[in-house]
Length: 469
Image (cartoon, rainbow, N blue to C red; front, side, top):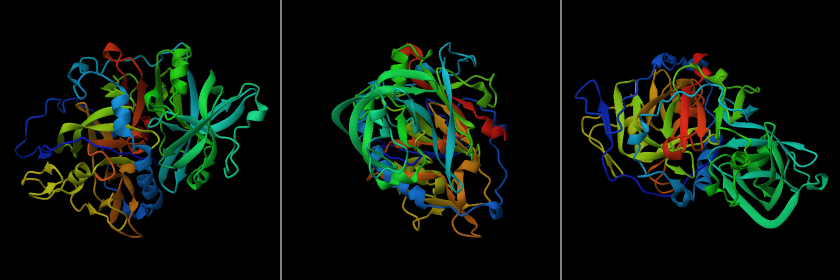
């Protein structure tokens, strides 16, 4: 869905764009070394006559909201449990592709997710939970970029379904105030405890926010509330997340959850799996899962080393960017300097603190800023055939061009809006990236609390069945 970020620590170093066909540079220490079967992501040029016109309004709304969602990112990041030197991932590679059998858990649960679309945008994925005794069914946005659970309660201006505490025999009201900001808006209310179940797994006395006031933005969305699946260290309520309580109570084993996000679904063909991996959604279920270490137990953050375009040009970031894997964000957002380098580097220029060598050429010929929509936007020729890969901890992960192309700038235009947007250093940390559903639709994703070396958290990726369609 549509959310945000804020803070700083980046590079006064050199970001290098490499044309590997001419004067290739040696790979960085992390390397771009993992071979990927690229057959699933190669795409022909897009026929622009079949494309819709991009609706930039919900995207602009997401851009603004992300500032609120991630405004405390540095504080939260530093409060999390960090794993050794913050970007030292060298020891992870021996186990980075360890195979995990498809059936993992004796205690697990799967819940279907619905895909809420705004025209051609997959804006949000949401599913059902049951709250109270007897249970009341509500729907929640699934968000790995936050850590609080909340539902509307005693909310006169809320248009969606609300939790009715007077109908439950197990509800406890703490009378403590609660507030949180998201890319979709802001919510205010009271902290409460209640029996909550998701996918059939139940937690008693789960803390949640009973929201009595919301910004108007939430009333335009289909979900009733939200479930945060990041680490409890960043929860505004200061309480463990529902998944952490499932782990603590022995309700899931192992301590993982996995997510499949369908493309342009609308039906119940997306999925959230607690304590398990659902191999039905993996394009090649017997291939090794690629594991990437999490930087700190705060956000599901992984080190981003750079990007690769058309397998020929590498955009290398010497100091890794913190990339937040966020199911609650629709698109992909990169530091302004990195986004600019990706789209349109020409000759000898300098963007902020990042120097670009004079041999640089356009990464995407014909791409340009789209200030008519906002400083975050870029366009590129609709007819361009692209293969775009992100590099996390030395591993290359391509995305589907169908998700990158957001549509034409106007009817019959040769230019399309790109799905990678920039984050202003005035509003966000200059080393922060937000990797949303645009990426995750290409990768079945496994979020592992403690299965890495020495109990470290990690995120696993396997090509999604979306890419075989």
